[in-house]
Length: 93
Image (cartoon, helix red, strand yellow):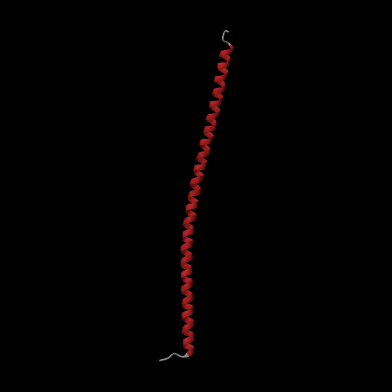
């Protein structure tokens, strides 16, 4: 039995519409997959940023402690140099 031309046309249009819907669904699935992948990447970058910020804070704290120790050592060296100069100045010739 042969379908009428209008039925053939309708079936072709239905097949084309279904094909477009399938294509749209595939694009959406791919977009969702890419979006999920990007969310994972963003979360990983955010975690890295937080870790790096923590490391930077720790580095600044170590630097501050090193500067304080450096000032203390410098002050003690100055005192030792002054003491040695005083002792040398008061020695009998």
